[in-house]
Figure 1: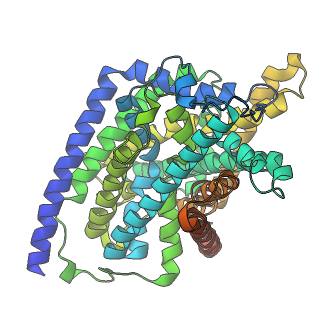
Figure 2: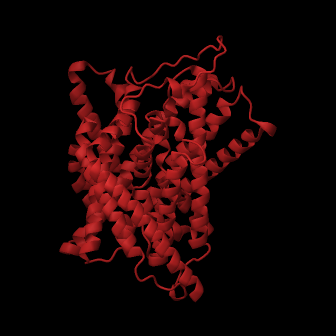
Figure 3: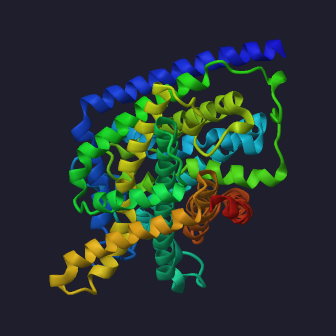
Length: 498
């Protein structure tokens, strides 16, 4: 056991050094390019918005192949302000590192140290593979329709149009369902952000001023500031705000790693510590949290569409794989050593496990709360950009401005109501991951692949057919089991939250 602890300490030193190096690189990039960094991010968001301006839909015609020439969509893109490979990698890191990484210690609590580590590698590989499936389907459909680029919903619609005959009439329904789940997922992220900020502010106030109040009280206090924040209609005005949010997140993560590597108690002295495996009834909660952490599939196509060299995005050593490898390394590091540090005391955010009364720990909770609070506006932009154009066309022009403010306010109030219903941070993360992220990240991409390759073929021995079917079954089982266990946990936790 002493030898095992020695290798744990060596592993901690190596991982900690790598993580500190990554944080230094991220901080340097942010400090040097704060404004230009977010201008590029804004263009990414505006790209999806422009594709839905004409009453919320984009008409794409399936091209004829009468000239016999192969269409290369990558060669026909004319992008304003294209992003470099490094900038795209930074966007991927930023889009995947959020509240999910802070929930990793509790995820390992639900799975066990070894199973949690191996399972996170397995789920990470599957999630990255489905990202590649989505990317390959988009490129194939772009070539067949002679379109430079497509968004998530357009890939789904076109794959159904070119898929099995019985699914073709449902192509418009497929687009609507995809947009609906994109909205639901982002609203779910907003709920998680909301509960995260309220829970951390609750602990800050309690330890600093001795005032005790429920999480719901802080949710109500934060409602008005969030409404005003999300009244900002022009995303460009959020550039300096998001610069502060990224800086707070980077500094906070660095200090968290400092804490979780300090004074790790030997495993032999732990009670209720699961070295290998926890229990089967907790595995679905682990599944939902892990899926929530790998939340970035919705940004894959916008990022690739805006790249200066999009051919570098995929591939074995492409931007996507390298970036997600770093993300996975960070997740495993926080989960493994966070659970090793806090054991069965691990909660929905590792910030809540930091020592109380220490100024450094309080600074982490404050900086993380500020970062997540400000990032709420960016997550909120996606459902607004999808849902508002649909409503805008039905409202008189002289009432559109007031209607937009009313719609923004109603969406924030909706996230408030959902957060009040599920004020437990760990459970809301698991529920959003199991119900929403699993549909977008595990279920839809193999369906797209099955439809896209319907008239082309599934490879030797139809291996793609069997592989995509297996992924689809895995996603459905995980979604149903994770959602069911999360709902049971929410119901059982309801009396204690009042």
